Image (cartoon, rainbow, N blue to C red):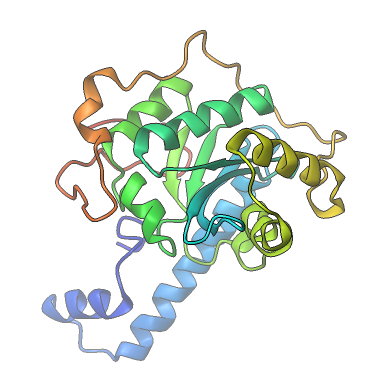
Amino acid sequence: MVEARPRSMIRDFHHFLREKGYAGSYDLVKKKVQTIRRGLGRQSGALFASADTPFAQVELLRIPLKGTPGSKAHLFTMLLGHSGRSYAELVPGCELATFLDCHRHAFAFFGGVPAGLFYSTRENPELRRLVGGFPFHLPVVDCGRHYGYASHPTPAFAPWMKGRLKRPGKILQKRFFPDYAFVSWERTNADMRDWMRLNEGLREPDSRPEKLRPLPETGFDPGERRQFLRLRSDSAVPALAGAAVRLGAPGRGS
């Protein structure tokens, strides 16, 4: 239950168990659920740090642009768990088509495709709107099928999410953008990546390369899923979702 319902509250598990005849306390359920979630976090941590089946973490942040009052952009980041290599891209909009294009750009930057991606939908409503809760939206599942990676929600107690030192989006948000005056999208992205290369905390190590899968000959074309791409910031499509995927298994549509 805990693995199949990652966004459920502990009180939901307690209520379900009481309906099945459980007479124990809420605190016992809480301790048990947290123990299971820590175990899942350790499993995901092993996947995230693997060189043979490398996983990456995808995040999306809203960034205020200095020099353009009232304007905000979205910062897409992808972090490879084993080597620590990271990709970042600042985009003006937050539509699903642009979001999936950022995946293609990140794979091209890394020179390959990781075995899986984690999405922090629990703590990020903007990302949850695009990706879906659990299960994910069909375009996201289709994109994973095209490139050959599995899509998973970042589990509770994921060890690499506890701090900010290894999360490129948080570092850029705190250290790069406050003093940077926006000029253009191309110039800002170029300056941001130059800053990342020079910054010690985000420097790309080349001594521990992971085994990435080769890129397909063509990029992902949403094509038949165009109606799913018209997601707006004030709406959601809860009924249109793909099938759930489990850790270590490739994503499949419903």
